[in-house]
Length: 630
Image (cartoon, rainbow, N blue to C red; front, top):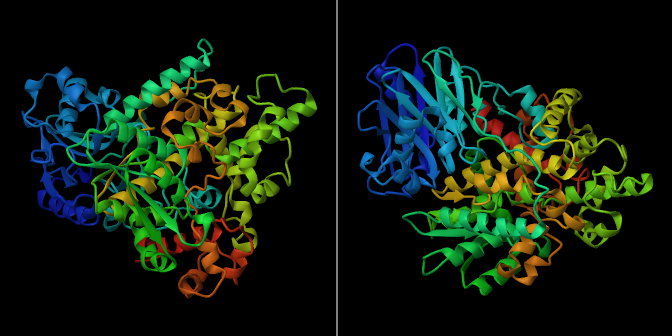
């Protein structure tokens, strides 16, 4: 796990390359506290840099790394979990180290750009070919590891974090299309970032670049929802157990100690229990964060239940209002751009505790999107069940639950009543894409706070539809369409949080649910097996019930790491004073997307205790102070 930076230029200048790489690396030094390296090609056209967090082959895995014949040079961020099997296939005599980095070099030498399809893991890497004078860059299937780029004239820059590109951008401007996405979803769609000239390499994409020319990325992998109707539910359950157990085992490969985040929900609890079962470590550490504002913001009782049952060492981080004031600016800096809600803040605090004990930590990202864990899926089906019952179409293939069977699961929606009121207020029984858009669209909760025209609903909705109605999904299952949209959009935002908040403290986060054999299999499972009777994540809880305490299996109130931000702001105190200063500044009030005269109270009055509008405005303002104005 590391940070990478590189430059590709048409005009040869070795000294300038070295200078540029050193400047870029300095901004991502936190990603690699164990070492660094800078290299320039003899042609003076390619410069590569690397900062290292040593996880595999601690002694001999330094980068940039060169192939034995000197033709290829690589910088790589991530972990290739099947590197041992690939070494065997490529021939052990080809290698001088035991690192997964050298395995990528040899795989590229043998298979070329097709090497990406042979890699099992998380990665972002660049390989310079000294003979053909071209650069190959690639990002993993799910976007677990970040990779950003910008083209400035005839110079191409890439980096693990967008902040490393800032010194080289001629103009820093807020992207109008990205800001429309941001206020709609609280993340950006596609390649966009909030900075006009900075882009993400899309997940599962790669490109070969020639000096002086802009990149053209091509997709090398896609998940296809080709539903398997030939097997029984029991067969799917057995297959799921085999694949997830295999994924956890391979994600435990490391030359350092591994621990696990434990939020108190099904996903992280399950992975931690499986890791404890398969790990050869004598002790296994788990980490939980809680706020002291009451049970609505504290899930530690569930983490304690798991730790006691599985004999884990549990570390609980108590997080308070002053922690927010002291750390939020640093959170936004490390985050690169604000995404996915205030959960980044407590994750930052917990990751700091993780860094005191282990270098690698497992996380549960992906479980909600793959197996259906969000309450909005249940809300959407509740509406469809009512519609189907009225119209007599419950058995036409569009429904995987009936209104009778869904009733026991509706208790899950108790805390989502404000969301349901807003959702059902208009457009009832409309087309499925329009209804899901209403569930995920946050822009209509801002009221008069935002200026008219800030959000381009037509363009953003069109991009939403292209993903929601993707050819790889099909039109038969509402459940698959919903989970697929979140898989392609929300999940990358959550992975950004996972990566940045862990790497801010020199910790590698691994996500075993995002193992491509498991994801490909899950996409073939019929929706009525995954979502039977409207029970969220029914399949996971059924298959692995033996590993989960009853308190976790039976809970109906999964929170998703809520932050008591709105509670802090509803009373006088350091958080309200701090946020009032930030949003009340002359600079903040001149932002072109805000109406004149808005107040903190106006924002608070427009949302529930878990609402994110104030977070969206605060984090965007802090980000602009650091990334645009500075």
